[in-house]
Amino acid sequence: MSLLERLNDDIKQAMKNKDKEKLTVIRMLKASLQNEAIKAGSQGLTEDEELAVLSREVKQRKDSLHEFEKAGRADLVSKIQTELTYVNSYMPEQLSDEEIEAIVQETIAQVNASSKADIGKVMGALMPKIKGRADGGLVNKLVQQKLS
Image (cartoon, rainbow, N blue to C red):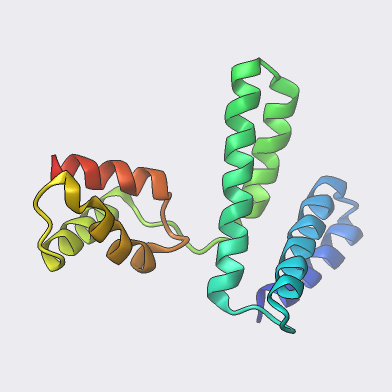
């Protein structure tokens, strides 16, 4: 089942359950995916493109969450956390810290990286392997630690 089909089914279910908050988030995700397809000039998106849209939505919510926490807006923090939960339910299963570390070590060995000057090479080879399954910021910090 494609992501759009899954979103459509979940929209129907949220309507039946009268879950307005979930319905709003799912509709927003569907609109983002459709807008991306229009921008690309195609009927549908590939899995990678869908994943990129979902990752962007997660990142936007995490950034908002951080800003609202800094501003002391508990009402908005809880709303964003709920939205983040709904969006994350459509993301692929996230890698554990140990799995990420193993992939980082393997990639560093593959590209023969030895110093911080090689971070770009490592990240370029690493990100396609973990796309959507790990936070890029966390991965970048881990690579920097390993190469310093």
